[in-house]
Image (cartoon, rainbow, N blue to C red; front, side):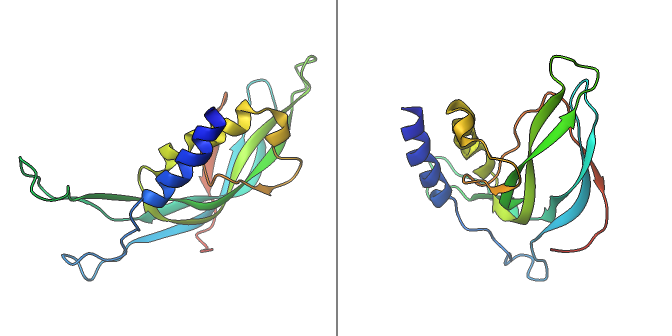
Length: 174
């Protein structure tokens, strides 16, 4: 039932999102922008040796606005929100060595590798949480094998036992 709900509801929510806005009539000289910036990401886990990997982070300025409403409402609510977030990402398994733990000598972490960013509806990330949950609920057969693989549900930031740290590297564009 969950799989049916996720496979039908998530695409509908994605398609229902309004398109991003690149210009506003009130500020014709301003444009939205969103880029994937190169970073060095440190992947860690409690009791394991951290690893540094090359990744990207989304950085930009996207438009949002809210026009005052009336009651009773005479027209549609004029609220819009875009955020700079991953448009294309892959999941990669990063294996960490845990020399101080004899029971679990290695830990595999799934890391989102960002390939491209764009201005997208602010609520999009929340609408896809169930899709990634589906990957975990159905077990190992849906987890990526070694190496990077495109993630079929877009992007998501799974909860981690230990935090990931990000350090800006160069400011090169895609």
